[in-house]
Every structure is written in C-alpha cells, then in structure tokens.
Length: 137
Image (tube, rainbow, N blue to C red):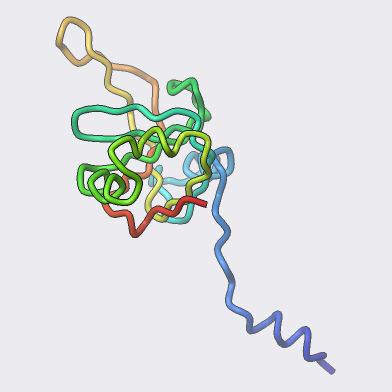
C-alpha cells in the first residue's frame, strides 16, 4: 500500500535546479552537441564591457577553463540599465545571478596583427538577449 507522502513525491513536478559553473561546464563537455539548455547560476566575479556587450564572468581569470560567462546583448544591457542605472555592470559584481538559456562551448578567437589566429581555448557562454531570462538573487 502506497502512503500519501509517496504519492505526492511521485506526482510532484520536478523542479530544475540552477547549475553552478563547475556542474554546468561538466554537463556541456559531456554533451555531444556541446550545448545544454537549462538554468545556470553564478556569483559575478568580474564584468567585461565592450561597445556592444557585457560579459558577466564567474572567475576573475576570464580565460580560466572553469569560467562561466553570461553574455548580455545590447537589448539586455538597455533593459538592465533601465533597472539598475548607467553603471549596471558594476552593480552586478559580487552579486549572484541566475540565467535561463542555452550554455554553449564557444571557441575563443584571438587576433595577431589584426588577423584571426587559431586557438584551442574555449569559453562557456550563455547569451542573454532579454532581462526576462536573468534574475539577480
């Protein structure tokens, strides 16, 4: 005879837990597609700004093989600045951020004298196009 508690466990919806950097990277590396859909979480160690993107990094060493990157596009940056002000990128340093999306293993392209040079380095990146996929915890 099944107890009520067993029944509740059996029918309770499975809640996906957010994967921290180490687990997320291991899951991507184990994937044939080198990409995994899910929810990912990290404490932002450093933010790199370019003219058209913010890169939230889980490690101060942004070239580290254990670094998880949340790549915010111009639309997400605009939305973030509306919420947090013009220095929104700095407001996220030291904060825990959760993102829903696709984590991909992406080759790092380096340049030498303006030409792309091959590299065996990769980074693990979730592209964030909308703030609806990002939550500051």
